[in-house]
Image (cartoon, rainbow, N blue to C red; front, side, top):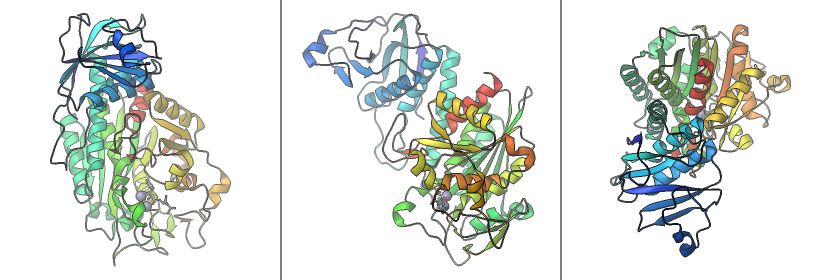
Length: 479
Ligand code: BES
Ligand code: ZN
Ligand code: ZN
């Protein structure tokens, strides 16, 4: 992330020195509390929608629908993006909204400066360096951001941008070893512990399902285990992430059009690493473990096959009927390991099914699990954080579709319908009775990778899951 220094000033808007100004026009009300040069609205025929740039006063007017957190977050992102291509490096604006809305605006501002330019010869030449909030507010309820609010937004934005960077890396670069190395670096800088289980350790752990997926890859698998354990921890939450650094489908090979973007099949695992970084830097009073199952799903003479029977760490046998349903195989062994850590809450994040994208659209994650109340709580936190998600219901009829004639369970359903839920039910079959009510499965296949920019998400990885989970954990801690 390119850093922006955001500050709250005690000075008035007029007296603050900055290269340019930002003024939001709320709900087409062309009267602003600042009345800089409102004549320009008439001259330019501006009705309060979209952008208007007053070149003489170097002021950007931007129309927003209302002062909700969602509108302000997106507006913050959009105005910074607008200025990135202009030769201005400091901006000033007034305050809008109460604390939670300002928090959303701050995150939007930080994320507006994000660009994935790693492979580009020409980089953005004018990133924004500074945003100064004047003492004025849009109305009486407007709150100036405090240093704590700014720091919080920065930590969250930094985690999201780090996740985006790694997910966006090309698959030849972002291998399981790369993810493990990144996790170790996060651990070092955020003062958390990190253990990496290599192939030998996975064999010792009897992770037959995870290992089968890895078989045709030239890269060794890695199970990454991060742990943040503050002294004042109130409870323990274990997060599990699907870290497929590439998913070509294996022998049940994906068609080419569906294979591109599958570098993003590591999004769940990367989100988990980002969440641990943010939780540690925010100093939240809760113990958090992050488990990432990192491997490629490749093709070759050594590949696992449809018809293979795998023995999972939980001891259950799995009939493979489709090698492209690999995420669930990696996850069940990671979930097994995770349950040994005796979590109070267990959540997995995965780009698990195309069916979830078909069902909910590309903006929304699916929430599954056996505990309706826990699902509602996660949904509520996620929506407040600005991430879209919806609850998908399990039922016993869909569960039956996973029955196998030769093993304990089959890795795909025998119906074309309900694929997101049957994938969730497959995972659920490996959750022990004691943990059924503590577990949530979040399918982020839709929003994890963005092919057409939307909300605060540019092309590429979005960092889906990070904001939602941090909000959920903060709510758990009562912060
Ligand atoms: N990684 C994919 C799911 C996916 C699809 C993520 C589109 C993001 C965008 C997963 O491993 C997969 O291939 N799932 C199959 C399951 C099927 C074989 C039962 C799918 O969704 O088609
Ligand atoms: Zn797959
Ligand atoms: Zn996959």
